[in-house]
Amino acid sequence: MSELPDPPWRTPSRGRTRRPLSQEAVVDAALAVLDREGLGGLSMRRVAQELGTGPASLYAHVSGKEELLELLLDRVSATITVPEPDPRRWTEQIKDVAWQAYRVYAANTHLALASLATIPTGPNALRVTEGMLAILFAGGVPPQPAAWFLDRLFLYIAGDAYEGALFGEKVRASGKDVGGYWTGMLTQLREYYLSLPAERFPHTLANLDALMAGGGDERFAFGLDLLVQGVARYAEPA
Image 1 (cartoon, rainbow, N blue to C red):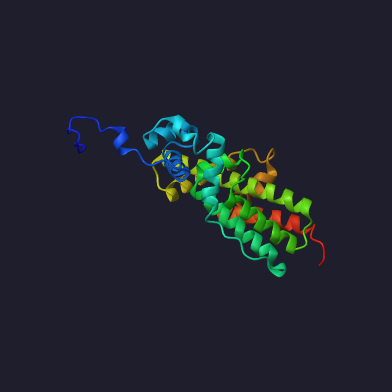
Image 2 (tube, one colour):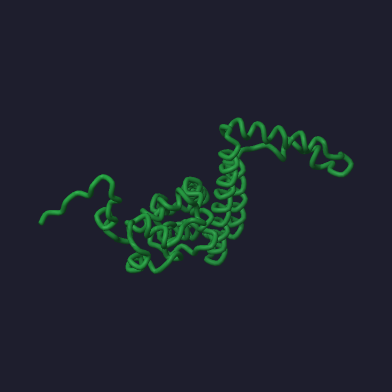
């Protein structure tokens, strides 16, 4: 007997709308949940609900939330490209990859937070790490400082991107556009600083313009320069 459609007053059967399960489908559903509900709302149960199935069926494809986060991080890492090492341009190449990673985390802010407690082990993340190590080694940076540099670099990238996400939430909560929010906040902040007693905060007040100058990209670029210049000190002559 052919299957009949449900009457319009009946809730459609989940079994008829269920998506075929695969690891890719699980990651797709997890990204959807993460986008709507944030990292705190992400769980195997919620992903299963998104797919119209039970949590137990997910474990044939993902071992648990920890692996799920690794898979999510690896998915977004797929967009990062790493050039062939050029010893003459290694610092520029490292900065280029760092900017790509920063843009990826800025576009996936909940994953930026997750990355702070997750060691990336997927094929795309390993490809990026391998490529960046090759660039650093081509520039003459020894293995130990190169390894610690990458650890600190990605911590910096994720932390900066997540801070941007927190500010974004404040903008949305204010009901203002981005320009209006920042103009108002900076005006209030300047007024507050100027109200401080000069005898207690002479350096702050004398350098207020410098303290408040620069947007997110400018400040990220400055920090990135500091990190790259720092590791470049360890580079050995070819």
